[in-house]
Every structure is written in C-alpha cells, then in structure tokens.
Image 1 (cartoon, rainbow, N blue to C red):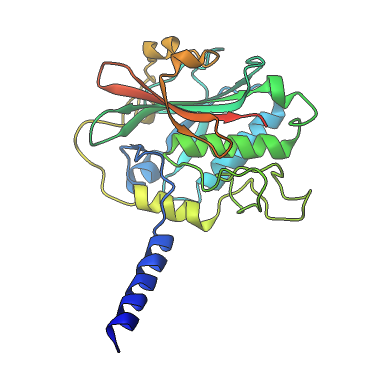
Image 2 (image 1 turned 90 degrees about the vertical axis):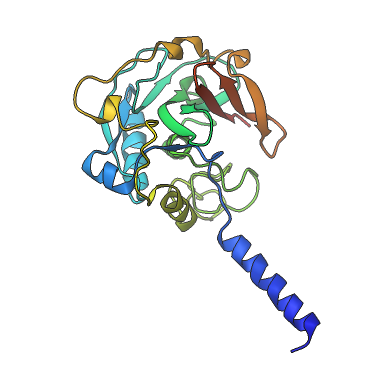
Length: 273
C-alpha cells in the first residue's frame, strides 16, 4: 500500500473515531458520584412542582434518565417559591416567573479547579409561557423538563438548531417536541448518545477529594439549605455572571458566576422562540 493510501486511510479512521467519541458533556461538570453510589443511594430530584402535568413530566424524565448509569429518585421537594438550592440534590420547580424570555433554566453549583464537581442544582420551569397556546402541551413540558434535568447531570445539547430534523433526544432543540407535526423522531426521550455520554461521565470509581454531591440530600439526615441560592436572581441576567456560550440563534445561553468561595454557579437558559 502506498503512502498516500495509508495517509488517507489513517485520516478516515481518525474522523470516524472522532465522530464516535463526540462529547456533549457540559464543561466537564459532574456529580462526585459513581454508578455504584447512586444504585445504593440515588441522586434526589426534589419535587416542588404544583400541577399534575408537571408531576407527570418530572416522573417521565426521572424514569428516562434512570436508563443511564446515574440513578435518581423523585422525592418531596425541599425548596421555596424562589427555588433555592439544597445541598446534595436537584430541586425542580415551576411558577409564573414572568415575561423574561426564558422557558426553562438549569443552574448548578460546582467546585472550581480540576474536579468540577456539582454540589447542588435547580431546575425552574416558567409557567408564564407554558400557560400560552404555543407551549401549553404535555409534549413541551416533557421536553423542557427532561432537558433541564439533563443539564443538572452534566450534559449539554447534542444540537441547537430548532428547525432541523429531530435527533430523538431531549438534548436536541426542536419546534416539534414529540415529532407529530412533521412525522419525525420524538424528542422527549433519550437516545443512545445520551446514555453513552452518561456512562463516560459516571461509570467510574468515586473520587476522594472531598467535593461533590455525596453529602447533604443524598445521605441520612435533613438536607442542608444553601443561603448562596438567594443571591441568584434568575429574573435578572446580571445576576447570572458572564456569558460563556451562545446557542445556534446567537443568544447567550450559558453563564458562569464565580462565588468567590471555591464554587461557581453555572446557568443554562432555554429561551422562547
């Protein structure tokens, strides 16, 4: 085989390997939990939602994400109207948060440095828009709930184009959540890429550097409230920190705020279209 053929073959193999290993992790943020940890003690999703429709969306999302190696459990919420965080768990809330342009928000508190361990998270779902004809459907609620919870586990989007074909995952932006309008894939679920990414993040032994989500809401005893949460005003973008990423529409979608105490708050925003 001549050198040109060898070079072409090598480049082709590198391209395929790169495509297979493509990552949609969210800045390497992850809970300091292994699969074994969460089998014994699932990561808690605090149910602070107020309607049967949202309860169904939360249950469906929890069930879908439990196909992955990181196990979770829906429990009684420990938050308030502001959806302040609780150490060691994710609080999920809905309310009429106002005409602020966002449909859903996911914020995670994480340690700075090499570990990037998530210590707590919140998901907020904005009924100001979900009560309008455009978004008032179980399909939209299921999609956004699944996606925002996925962000709190450390996943980013697979695709951010609202107008192309569905990939069959809630980590894909779409204007056709269940695929029924255009006869395409249902984007309210997970696909194999999500499961592979979760395995890459969590199928490992738990680290021992003292960070992460093993305490507070995952162990015995009462979860610990975090007063820092009160300083994060999700209705005020200046409170989110600096924008570090834009979506395919050019809107700022990921923000980082340094809390100055060894932690950052990272916020992902799903804007209305």
